[in-house]
Image 1 (cartoon, rainbow, N blue to C red):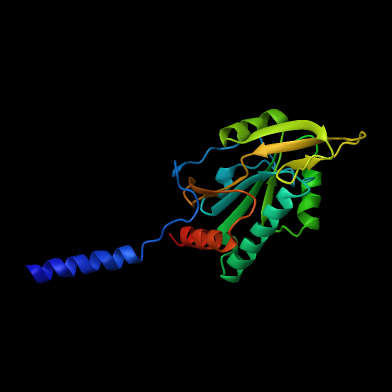
Image 2 (image 1 turned 180 degrees about the vertical axis):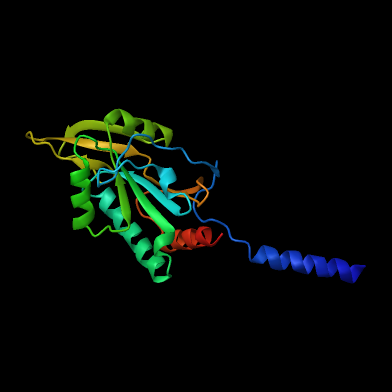
Length: 211
């Protein structure tokens, strides 16, 4: 009996040792995907998040005229695509960017943005302000446009210059987060902040693809 018990414990330990734990924040996850309505991609084609069901989706928010934060996030996610593609997983995931600047980010602008920055694996979504606001609210993204003196340090804010001496209008959206959605359409984790851990995201996405 003792030998049987030890054998069972050994099996349980072996199984648990191979169990994978997602490396982002999983507090309040998993939960069902919140669909976005009436948005279009950079080609002007109506697009929903459920269009990518069957793929792992990496979802984040930003805008094309961002000077610091978005390029930093884009660069990290571009590294993610490179590493996933090297593993032969190119068609198994999708990166989705939802704009927080509907005044400027029309499909033509986003298409050019995608092309000039080499973000081939990305889909960019835009739409009417009221429809985008529903998406922001659904995902807990607070978007503001504020005017501040240009000498203020804006490293952690998303900025958009509008002219006028000594003043600029800045778009801020908080929190800065990247959400991972599994193949079944469940949101399973998020990564907070500007500096994304590329290798951890690659490992998480690869694991979710293979489930």
